[in-house]
Length: 241
Image 1 (cartoon, helix red, strand yellow):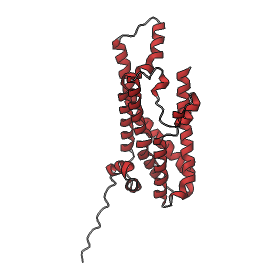
Image 2 (cartoon, rainbow, N blue to C red):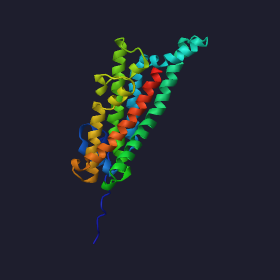
Image 3 (cartoon, rainbow, N blue to C red):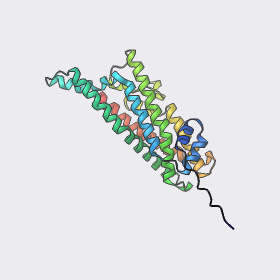
Image 4 (tube, helix red, strand yellow):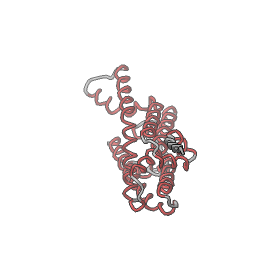
């Protein structure tokens, strides 16, 4: 009697995972658990961040002003060709760095979640894939909207200093400058959205109800937000010095 060989399981759908993280999280979590590759969401996150930088457009010249002033003090008057070259170098640097930053962000986030949820026995690779996909929202879409808002504010004459290149999108809308603003900015719609998805994703991977994983995952998210706030605070303090 002949036996029919079992059909090989279908490969995880990367497209379904990336679309699902925005519209159907349960489907995304299922594909992530099946092993949807992490490189594509990291690249998409980088592309969204680069797009935000491109949309920022001429507003980015404000960030170059200190360097241009030092050149003038040294007796060199920047030419239009020199300005364009500096913009091009900045854009190429962004294109190279953003996917790397997105990958590091996902790696750090996964490490923090893994450290606080060891008792759940969720594999690190699964958590890394999860944070890579949620990074599309927490980092990619956030950077894209930031670029759009900065361009609109620049067109309205509201971008005067390098700090103005960081639009207020979270608790920092209430005020605050420097380090205070950095910590307040860590709480925004994108960080909350991505954080909720991480909690639900870990619950799905661990086969536990969300309330059973909420505290350890939230601890990791708070630690990650503090790291991000420290980085932004350092950047703002450097701009103001």
